Image (tube, rainbow, N blue to C red; front, side, top):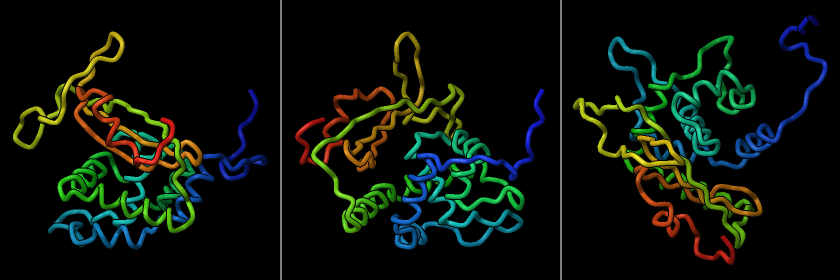
Amino acid sequence: MKQQTLAGFQKYGKTTRRAQFLGEMDRVVPWAELTAVIEPSYPQAAPEGGRLAVPLERMLRIYFLQQWFNLSDPGVEEALYDSAAMRSFVGIDLGREPAPDETTVCKFRHRLERHRLGKKIFAAVKQHLRESGFKVTTGTIVDATIISATSSTKNKDGKRDPEMHQTAKGNQWHLGMKAYFGVDSKTKMIHTVLASAANVADRDALPYLLHGNETRV
């Protein structure tokens, strides 16, 4: 067996497409403007005897990772431990602190949904990208993916979450929701994100995923 090199002393390396993409998004996304939108709805201090709140911009960056890479709450927690590029983008040093756990990520995502901030955030990003010269072309790629939940998923009243429904994919049934993405065919930038119950037909979501100027889909 060949002896493994110590972490941090590798001789070879390469900047991956993921790292390039995250570096560009770190540069062009207006983080200060977006956190200002969310700040009135985000707790600034820890509850008595509780843990300090995770910095708002860090949680927002994790939320964007979920949208860009189609990651569930536990999936993004695992990805942060697995990917140095994602940790760098979020600003996590595992030598000093752990990544936010899936419960923290879930609570933040629900907070955005409860205050209807998701659409405001992505609208602000699209406007800023246009002003920065990132133009949406006349082609859109549309994709849908199932976000599965366990059958034991319950809301705070102990009942199954009414937003979770079943759908079939092939010969397998899934309980959960669907995420839809409208992606610019040239730049591969996501310009529209939509979430629905899993039993919503893809054709019903299609009109909401287009920006209106497409000549091809």
